[in-house]
Length: 178
Image 1 (cartoon, rainbow, N blue to C red):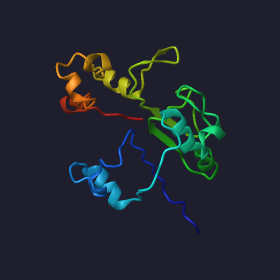
Image 2: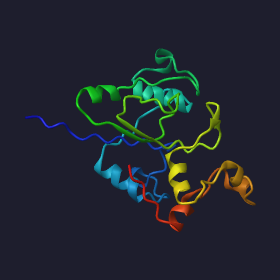
Image 3: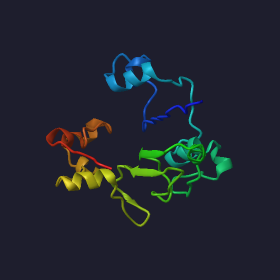
Image 4: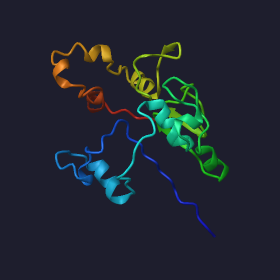
């Protein structure tokens, strides 16, 4: 009898090719990514199909170029993915993290979605309050926002490299239960 393999797909957001030690970036300290890189599959000659988030993800999860799937810019609706094919094959499918589907909570073929878009800007007629915001709120914490980053005295010198919310994890234990 054939046993279906488990499939775990990890897509890091805005991960540059030269930022993983196990793949040659000796100036980086990435122990968890290194472990995944040495135990999993690495694609070393890849290119995105679009320079923007939504068209790129829609392309990756539909299997079609943006000019074919019709998602050419951020904010355009999409939700049909090959993940539905996994469901049809009997897989339990779960998405945790960013997908940038429009609407933001489209099923996109997943049985369960824990949307963590980490947005702090106005989207779809409202400010986005995702699962991460909810977990922090349950602990009486608030995720740092771009508005707060801009008040840092060295904001311009950081060139977008910010410690952000990670100090919140160190200050309290946060338990997320599905």
